[in-house]
Amino acid sequence: MIAPPSDLATPPPRWIMRSRIFYPALRLLVLGSLRLFCRLRVHGVKNIPGSGPLILAANHQAYIDPFLIAAPIPLRPHYLVHTTFMHTFFVGMVCRTFGGIEVGNGPPARALRRARLALAAGDVLAIYPEGCRTRDGRVLPFARGFAQLARVTGAAVLPIAIVGAHGVWPRHHRLPRVGRISVHYGKPMRAPGLPGINGTAARLADRDFALKVRQAVLDLAGGLLEPSRDPDEQERATGEAG
Image 1 (spheres, rainbow, N blue to C red):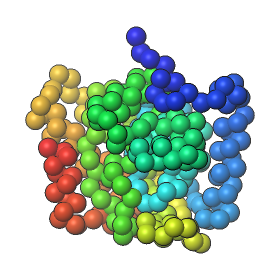
Image 2: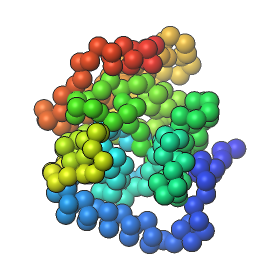
Image 3: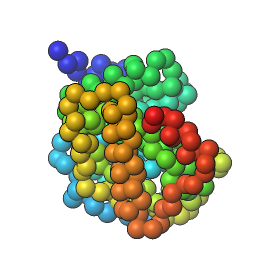
Image 4: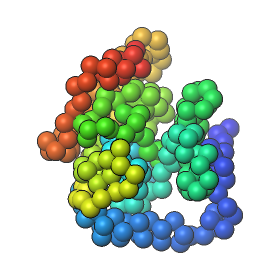
């Protein structure tokens, strides 16, 4: 029996669970703020399916990336959140309230299981396959974890390109600055249907699919994003994929 989505994280307060207007109202407020202060422009919203299971796979440029990819769409995603943020008072409360799934503390299999449960329940899961924010605006190699999730759950993967957020809130800056941001939603992609594979074959299939999704993100940006060619980062990604 599949556990309900509320098993994935600390349950939200009851008044939020019962409210039908809280999240939509908050989403519109955030969207309006982003359009006003970041001159946010959104492209390809029509490509988004009406329901899950769905994995939102985006490049990671700034702290505000979760708001950038979720505010323009009616779907309500879960997020993989590093344990550092989950245990910060205010940020952690917000993350838990809106379906954060803790990663980075305890066995990786626990976070993977919770992510699989979310997708099995037909939910939406937002993932940043680079694993960390970019240091220079370039797109780092994608680790293969999301590709494995897509393969074993049958969830579609929606590539998303975030452009300009690094300039608005660089990794080494404490506060954001004025700038222009655009978010580009691609068409859903499906992991190869390879039932029964495991071991090296599965890892290679996941790695190849991760490479295709990363390229789709780069293509969506229309040349405004560049791939990282840092040999250390490439070696790290190869190790995770292999």
